[in-house]
Image (cartoon, rainbow, N blue to C red; front, side, top):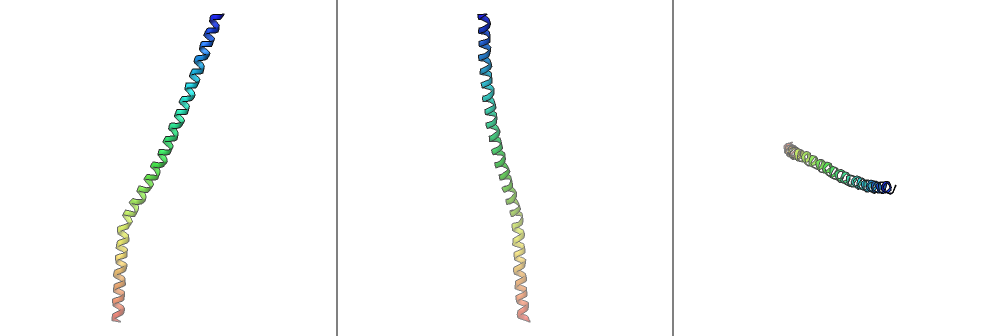
Length: 84
């Protein structure tokens, strides 16, 4: 019986070690998932900023052109009012 008790004790010890290793692995996995989530949020934010800058860069020349037309129109109207 003593031999059987030793085997049971050894298996119990191994089981406990495996449970601890499993828990540590789960903790490590959760930490890595948290890192991935943080990086994913940062990536999404950066992509949105890139999109915003891209839109602004697309609209900027158009705004300049519109403002130029507005200035030209204003000059024409002023000139016309001087002639009248």
